[in-house]
Length: 209
Image (cartoon, rainbow, N blue to C red):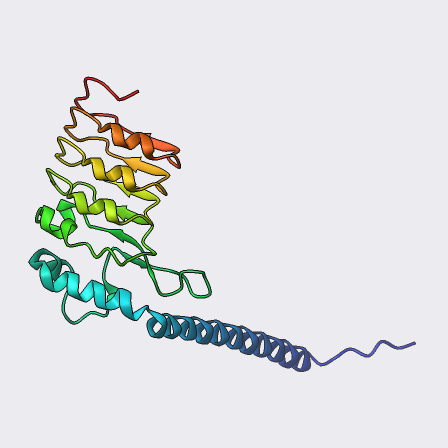
């Protein structure tokens, strides 16, 4: 039997059609992903906890140092170092993490007043990072944030820790390395959930049994 060969132009047209269909499919997938991303982003903006948002704005108003870090024009979800619970998570829209930029980024030290004014009603806050900010002391009020599971105070100028940190019974990680600590309060022995404690690079002479 004779083999009927397609005209070269027909093959080229079919190939172009296949490429066109593939490009259209990929474009549709990309558009779908972008739409889903934008919907998630919008939902996140709308679902930010009103109480947490108000607490953050009030906190910023009390502390000029925070106003320098978080510009007036920005929405709370855009403030650097503030982490919110993911969409569809248990803590959706709640503040779950706060991380202050270090001195090299902010170009100014962080006063104890900023931490003392930290809102106690951020009861979904689990992570607090205050590294390389030249702070010399920690306010006793930090012991009120009992939801904390991770507290990083490394690379500062701390000479002591308040006994009130012993109230943070949910804490699993405490990093106070690279400070000037000479002693550790015995109350830290109450941290029954603690699995990681970094005391390195301090001036400790003894550690409570």
